[in-house]
Length: 84
Image 1 (tube, rainbow, N blue to C red):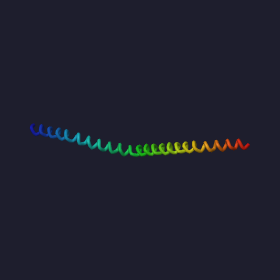
Image 2 (image 1 turned 60 degrees about the vertical axis):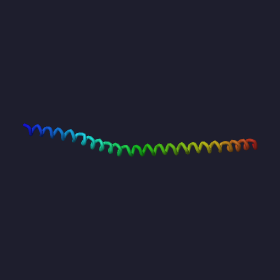
Image 3 (image 1 turned 90 degrees about the horizontal axis):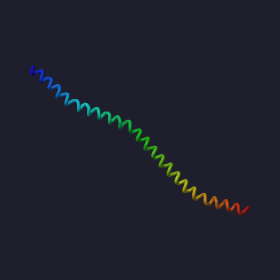
């Protein structure tokens, strides 16, 4: 009777120690899996942001150049009208 109580106590103690250990390992695996799955999404997000920044910079530069070029074009059109 005493040995069965000790055996039950040993099994319970082993379970108390093993369960958190196993749960911690499982959590580490799931975090690693989530990180591996998130990496391509993060990369795609980063590339999309960089592309948007490049487009915005190109649009701003084009707008700035377009504003400078439209004035000479208007002047040329006015001169052409005067000549006619």
